[in-house]
Length: 403
Image (cartoon, rainbow, N blue to C red):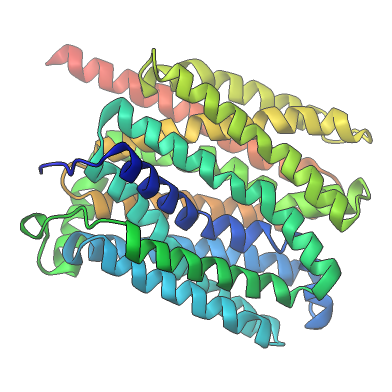
């Protein structure tokens, strides 16, 4: 497939628009974290039921990407993206109008399907336009732009909560997604040529999924990517209970602390960009994954500490490693998708958010009596991801040697 040539200015605008679209999931999760208690009270529900709206959103992201992926390989990248963005906008308008937690959680599932479009299409467009280290660099930029959500949205949500109540948070989501919809129409090109599109989306989608899932290397890297990201979702799910419940921070204080931790994603993302000037994504993963395990182990060991900063420092480092490692793992996985970039992106995302659902639910069920559930939510995925990566690397090297 021939790649579209973009001017530097157009390439920047495309990347920025994709970055804004990728903000939908963090906006829809991080922005209302401080409001979980108020939301539960207003709907006469438990805090656990409110926290489950996070897990249900992750499940919706998993389902949505499997649904949208084949459509992007059949109807192009842009049409499914615009439909998904409209769906996210409309459900964001509907959510503050309901007063029952069951209806709220059902709408959150639908909202997640809309949010998944930007994620699937974003990765597919990067695959259409770039390859190798350049693809990893652009993926890193998207991850860095993605961090604007975790940095800004908790504080923004806290301010909106204090001034206008929790419903204003979802109205703000709708306004942001409407802006993204306009920019998508105006700026994003269609990167999948008509001759490269597939017919019969369900049949060919299932066929492409079967081929990808039969590739051990793709499955390994998708699992590694998902497990690395799982640490971030453990932090998102448990942070409100830990920082507000255990360390006693106010809603504003929680928003600031969340933003401080999330800045690690930008700093480590920048470090990754520098490393990619000299090393391949695989070499970066080889060197840094053991450090990720070490930082999450330290975090788990200090999870019973009563000192905020003793706990926050290893958490900051661990979240930074998530930002550094995830872009490289995603770039390697997407490089293995060949022509079916839409289905490959969907499978990658579905695996990531299936793991996110499991991790998030486990952290929520673990409760907020201590920070241990959240800490284990980072440590266990880090250990499994590292073991899988090195086992898969050893198998690949052995296969190459035999050839």
